[in-house]
Length: 223
Image 1 (cartoon, one colour):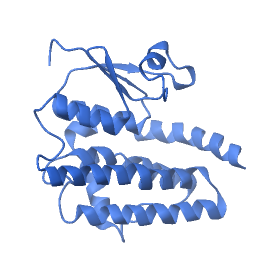
Image 2 (spheres, one colour):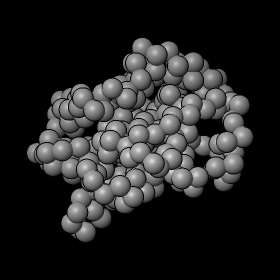
Image 3 (tube, helix red, strand yellow):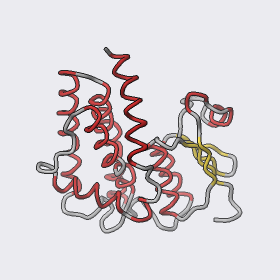
Image 4 (cartoon, one colour):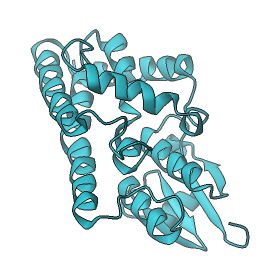
């Protein structure tokens, strides 16, 4: 896509920025990546996302788009090749529904299990397992939510397969149960091992160390 200016403002450990990297990779779109120092947000980030002041932000020909799921849809609508959303209107609506379910139900419960302790932690972990089991029911027997190829819901949720395992290790909770969620567990593996996606994923050891420090700060604040 030469001739177009595409820039992504992100943070290496942000799974939401990873979503956008995955979409750009799948679409084979060339872009400039700008790493943000989140404790010291750049004037560029504050200018392009003055409302939430968060990453990711996609800047296309000088025009910013914020919020990762909105960015994914923008990318798919702007560059028509290698579509990530289904072509059928009903299937497209379903993909949007499950992506919303991930952000509204799965992610908050996982984060709550990460940030809380004692009974609250266990309650959040139980809620996370229930929500992930519901997500598994939508996968059915398909290799990917997009069918035989990676699509919108796979991009929206695939990172959980790595981040949730890190939460399990740090917070000592069970989130993705391989016995009760075999289809979901296998699907996470397929998404994270897909070659075009795998090359964008940060090293696990580095993520683990980063999130250990993050966990100490969050639990200290809640104790």
